[in-house]
Amino acid sequence: MSARHADPLDHPEIALVSAPAAVAGTLLALLAMAAALLLTLLHAGTPAMRMAGAGCLAVVALVSQALFLFRLGLGETQIWKTVALVLVLPLFVVTIGLTDIMFHSLQARTMLEIPLHGGLGP
Image (tube, rainbow, N blue to C red):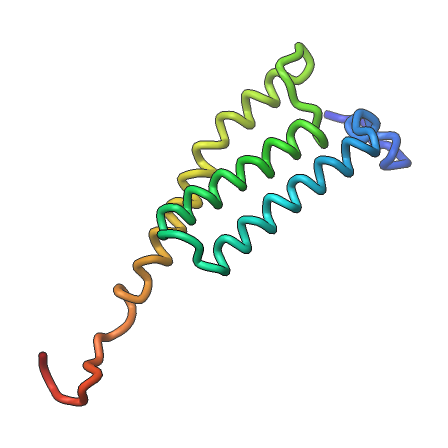
């Protein structure tokens, strides 16, 4: 169990982060997420291309935060945190993939098919 600190800035994990690394990690993650948002809003490419692009940009944002903000690496002190992150990545990908599939088929599953010509039947 960790000890309580009166000043949050004195916490050991906060002390590991330098100001330039925090700014770089935040900006890189923000740019990757903004690019994924624009990719989605502009409907660039096919749905599969959008999904792959957004997934790649999400990985860039995650890795930039892991490297710059959390200082994760393969060193003796950070190896288990890095392993935990790597083991969570497949869950992250599956969650995004299932969400994309769900929303892609939402209209077909929930909306009644109404003919546009006004008649009853095909």
